[in-house]
Amino acid sequence: MRKVEEVLLRLLKAYSPTGREKQAEGELLKISRDLGLEAEVDEVGNVLMGRGEEVWLVGHYDTVPGKLPVAKEGELLKGRGAVDAKGPLAAMIVAAASLKDTPVRVAALVAEEGDSRGAKHILKNLEASYVIIGEPTNTTGIAVAYRGSVKILLECRAEASHSSSPGKSAVDKLIEAILEIKKAAPGASYSTPSAAVTLIRGGSGYSTLPKKAIAKIDLRIPLGTSSSELISKLPKPPEGCKLTVTSAIDPVSVPPSSPVPRALARALLKQGIKPRLLRKYGTSDMNLIHPKVKSIAAYGPGESRLAHTDKEKVSIKDLETAVKTYMEAAKELSKLKQT
Image (tube, rainbow, N blue to C red; front, side, top):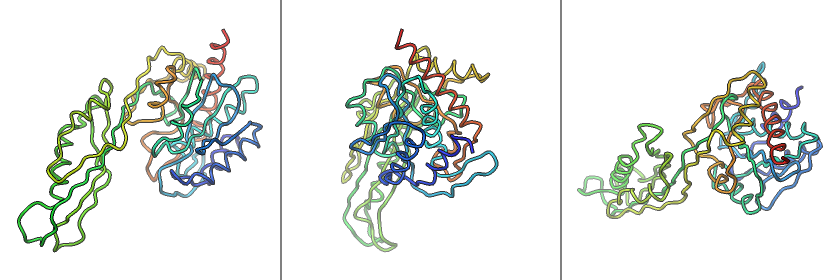
């Protein structure tokens, strides 16, 4: 069995939705020991492997919830996190273990799919010059930009009454507020804000008008707009409704000529692969780390369209390509720092 295949299967079998990463934490420590990598766990559960402080490979080992069968079917590995983002992380770990003469750190972070407390914690002491983020980019892509995000909680209240009574219920008010927010964030293209309603709750039956209703909305921010600017333009909610911003992350963009995307591009070219520069619709830990580490980009095996779906799968060929890409890029970046 190929090394990266074995590592990924071990990680996939350790189910680790955000907030329940402990089993996978233990497996990461065992994998590190088996591969001869130094490893430690920090205060929040991040697993830090390897050595050196200049070049960091940063992935995450939490996943969205929803356990999937772990399987190998031909040259494909399937399971929750195969794409987002245990596949990239497995390739990073194997790359670091193979770089005997190049100091490189691998950070397997917690809570990337949640409140990003893993990334926030490593920022306290991070002194890296170069960071590669492990996210699926279809193996040939290099992500140099991510949109930002604003997460909001809408809470609406009204008097409870019989459903035959006139007047607006809490749900009516909630719908009105959601529609106004969607007008402010129509999401017609990459360059316009978008709004996705991810949760609605309110009411208990047919005969009573709901007195309380809530919604969670995920707004995505295009490049050139800050989170504070978008928040300032949100419509005022109807009377009886309260809007709370629970998270705000600015967009990020890195020049393609920056050392990290350039090193990744050259690593792909050495394998006869034409690299593609990507601007991602989502948000990642790259958004949080970029203010401190300016030379940064995201790269990884796996089709990003399969992330968070029940069809997560990655090919062993793509995993092996990613291992070589991480290795070559890390070697180049390490030499840059030495000159």
